[in-house]
Image (tube, rainbow, N blue to C red; front, side):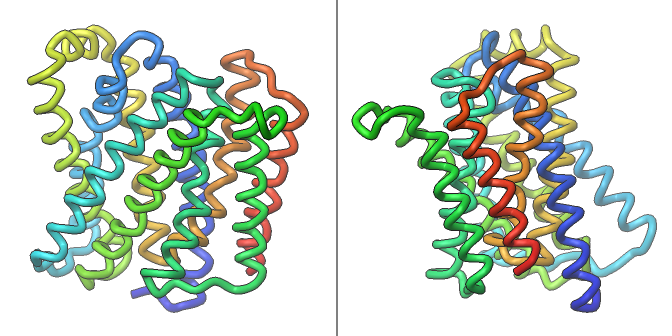
Length: 299
């Protein structure tokens, strides 16, 4: 295992890397969502991710062999829960893409950081400092500003519920992923690599079987778009690698609150690639997310 000081330093670059990769994955998914069903867009992030995760794990063992993990019933349960929760979270975020523009859809899903902080403190023995809670509260304010672009009476209940549902599912995914990583007891970064491969394999099998059963036409649509599918899977795998590794070093609440800077990357992509415009209220919300992330880094 890494010394405490070194691990404290490493989780920050891994989180920033994950946020950057995820921003691009969301951008590719947003474009694909205009051509393929929600289940198809969700499946696209897993199709080529499994071999990529397997290559990463094999590379670690070639570089420095360590003991193989001992698989327990609790580990299997945590992997299954995390895999299903992430499928639901991704599907709900694709629905958000269709309800509002790309940047705001991702901003709504970032309620994940707030929910993860609360659940982590209440049920996963992960209390936060005052400064860290300040970052979480600022992030919550940003989420509200971006969810409610007009007067209180004009708030879209449907958009709010979908956004909260996506955030809750993502939060549960990350909390269960961290717990699964800790149960293996392997050195850094092997535990995160095993969890990454296990989660992606389960997701590919579950969602692939569902799409093959209910939406066979979607499989053809994905086959006809190899470039888009490979891009989504690649950036998804790299993003998950960053998230899972960071969460094996630090609590989910801190990782996900810092990870809200993804929305800053999203804003840049949205403006330059999708040519979308944001209101001043949206820009204030994005700025507050950055402030919240800074509070977490200083906590």
